[in-house]
Amino acid sequence: MPRKKVSLFNLTRQTVDVPLYSALWVSEDKLLVGGGGGASTEVPNRIYFLDFATDKVLLTKCAVDDELPYSLHAGIEPVSENTFPIVLGTFHQTMAATLTVLPESGELNFRPHPRRSKQTAFTTESGKEIFQKTLAVSKAGVYAVGMEDGHIFVSKAGSTIQASDKLPGMITSLAMNDHGTQLFAACRKEVRRYDVTVSMEKKGNTTASVSVEMIKGLEPRIKGTHWRIIRMVGAHVYAVANDMNGRAAYVFKFDSALNEVFSRKIAPFAVSSMAVSDEFIAAGTNDGKVLLLSSSARPIHEVQAFSAPVTALAWAPGPDPKLAVTAMDRGVAVYRAVDAPRMISPSSIMWLLCILVVFLGVWYMLREIVVFQGDN
Image 1 (tube, rainbow, N blue to C red):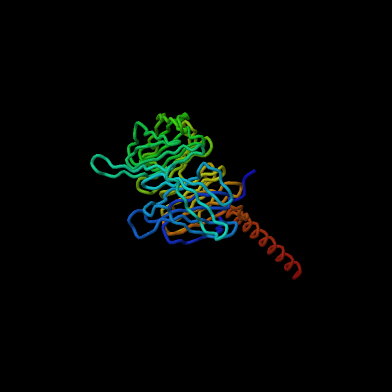
Image 2 (spheres, rainbow, N blue to C red; image 1 turned 120 degrees about the horizontal axis):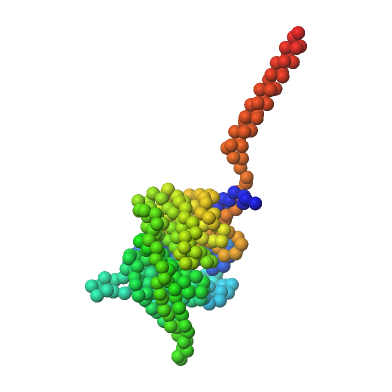
């Protein structure tokens, strides 16, 4: 049975004091968004907390003023009603932390965990500093970091290994399966799959031995495009390829072995962000649009969420299809995918008009016949 037409209904819209770049649902009704100005700027770096149970917006600064939280991930520790373990991706490090809502004041307390954080930025022999650009965190606690020079680092329980072969360009996106055994990386020229093996060792403190093996690589199949985003949901991988001139965007779906399931053009412009759920795909654009697609990448609905580039999208966990949207113009919005009222299609309207015209014509003819017979 075909699904009813679906549209995005705006639940809330907030404007904060910094550009936003990341979003994470820590529960079905609690959302974190992060942003700022980075290092050595007058724009602070902050995390905002939105609680839809109380309609509150709380604010906290990052522990290190020069660290921009461009990426937010759930930690592996248990979540309580007021305490949320998280992992932040910044340009210099992967930072583990705990956010706690203080019941008395309602304020948000940010507590970093230096021992579980990892410095990732490094300086080359020529003196150039190489920054972290993307982060993936599995539910098993395996971290993968993509660097601007194409290197990938994989960590678990204090052990870090560098993938032996770097990608041909800056890592733009990473994705992992829940177990942390499969890693997918994207740069403009190539998407790769790596197998990750982790064995735990007990030597005083428990440590891990990590190995990473490149299994397969794919160049963009469509001429004149480059890879931009990669996501993994269940056993499938979704990737976005943009036209190099920004005139088209394509979604590819692969199985976990990077065998193509389908590909589809989704827009006549480039896509800047993507989030995938079991039922929907959401894509954000540089001009502030959000596209709602079916799981097979068929267009469903489009909204103009902001006037600036959409920087992050995140589907809430649970059965309620809520979508968080952040933008560079300091905005955060949350939409719900709802069944739209059934509309009469243009073709149906034309048929109704034709029937009405025929009915009026017949009625007029019968009326003239009655009048003519009456005159006689």
